[in-house]
Amino acid sequence: MLPNVLEVARRLIIERVSAGETVIDATMGNGNDTLFLARLVGESGHVIAYDIQPEAMAKTKARLEREGVLDRVEMRLASHVEMGQLDLEAGAIMFNLGYLPGGNKEITTQAATTIQAIEAGLERLRPGGIMTIVVYWGHPAGQIEKEAVEKYCTELDQTSFLVLKYQYVNQQNQAPFLLAIERRK
Picture (cartoon, helix red, strand yellow):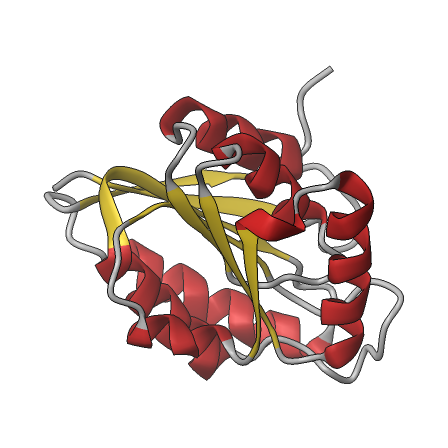
């Protein structure tokens, strides 16, 4: 069976990130990607995770504590746009756009700030590093965000970045898809 978009995103990151690296979870949510990244970078690695919702931070913190990896993660109750303030090189950056599963569906990622965050993240991505963006667009804000993010990604300079789109094309509704951006230099 073909892998889903989340599995592909994780595979691409596993291929490129080593233990001890710094990585970023741009959309903490329920902590699934934060936990994945914390395990991947190991005891000597560092994860910086962003979310604007206290509920997301609380769920993620509890999950990381249960799994014994909280000490590897720096959780920030802030917009992912704040990545622009970081002074580091990241091996990987993960985005899952949309709303917090099980949370308030009125609170969603937004096209303008997502583009700002992607741009800030790409400036911090090390050569050979990867950014994964899973686009959930089956809601009104998601439609707008999808168009903006795809447009931004198609305009990236191909000598600096490779952009992959992974999508099932015969699905009903608006199936999520993956955009993966590899920094070439």
